[in-house]
Length: 369
Image (cartoon, rainbow, N blue to C red; front, side, top):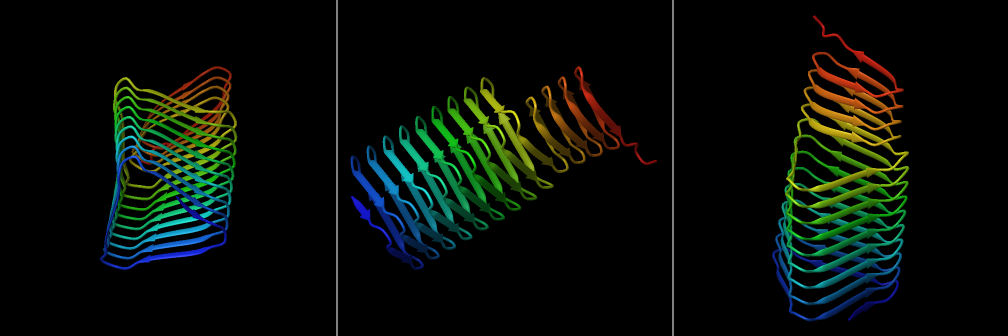
């Protein structure tokens, strides 16, 4: 058991070129408790090899109190390997009002492997500021094996910022039969920015149950730069449920020249529910292939740039602005009792189907001779 009281200043610095190996055997009970108001700084220099292996059947509990400032900086060119074997119970609780900063510099190789049958619970309280910055040229691999139960709960009023630089290779693989639950409370501000030229691959195996619930009044901004290759593959037999509460503001911006591939195999059950009263902006740059489905009574702006293939389906009672660039192939279906403005550029092949009792304006721009 490790207990750190209140108002301490703790600094750990690791120089360059060290080899650090930590091995935790089976059946241990490890408890770490950090009190309130501490300042903890961990700096790992360049060119280290750090290996942490946690055996089977351990119970590990980490509790971080309120009002701490925790800074973790990882220098360039490190090789960091974390392996968690089967059957562990890991619980991490972060209380309210902490400032947590994680910075990963350039050129690191980071590998996280979680074995089968673990129970991992992470709870983040209210009012925390969490900043994660990943530099350029890192190789990051996360593998989650079969049969794990992973629960992530984020409370209300947090500010979470994730920035990923240019030229990283990030691979996430989730095996079969996992139960993954993510719950985000109300009033959070979340910003994710991905730079240029990254290769991001996410693969989800068979038979997983994945549930994502986002509460009311959050502001979520995702910006993806230019020239990234993003591939998401979901194989057969998963149950995936995404629920977004009322009154959220969600902005997704995808830059030019990205290659985004989403593959959903046979036999999946996927439910995406967007409650009433959301304000959503989706901007798709040139050369996109996209399906956008919008529920009832939303206010939505969909902008499609040039040379795209797009299907847009809108439920009843929406207020929607759809702007279509040049040389697209587009299908737009509008439900009943909607107010819709559709502007179509030159050289498009477009099918617009309009339900009953709509107010619709369709403007077609003639191609310049």
